[in-house]
Length: 209
Image 1 (cartoon, rainbow, N blue to C red):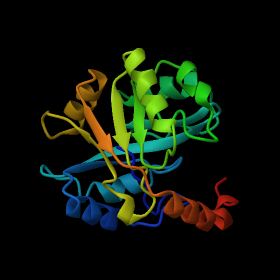
Image 2: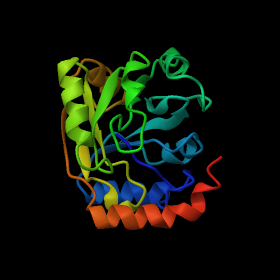
Image 3: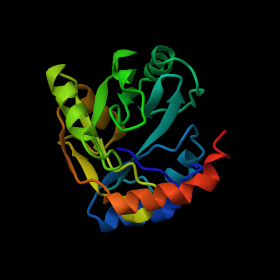
Image 4: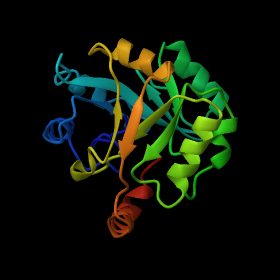
């Protein structure tokens, strides 16, 4: 439910290689959620089949934190408030998910800024107490939960997964998430691997905007 491709400024895996890696891990679908772009959607359509569903998505840098939009067809501008970002996502019939809301260095008040459809309760790049805090918040406030690898490299795909029991199409998947009929699991990226990959990203961060 949270995968980046080379269309993200920090993604190192082509759409085709992302699909190959996901299939090799035994997944039968992914959500492509590149940073502030939907350029990968056209290419992704070639790989979305009945037995492997690709959900068109985006990770939006709102003024209040990162928000996943799943099922989007139009790009939502960055740096809008969380309320406005969520509103524009829902106007497309899509769902809005608070991404890694308690991860270190993130704005933990994001979850209070708008009415989200779900909480990303497990993120493979959210270390230490981040995921337990996110899951506890979701459970206490009865939010639907998703899990995502937040993969930026091909070998990270499949570290986390969201299990659903529904028809193999995007609309059914989104509706089941809205209803909270999901099961999540995952493991975090090893700390040394995480730190090394953050270090590798530093030269590219300056080009994010």
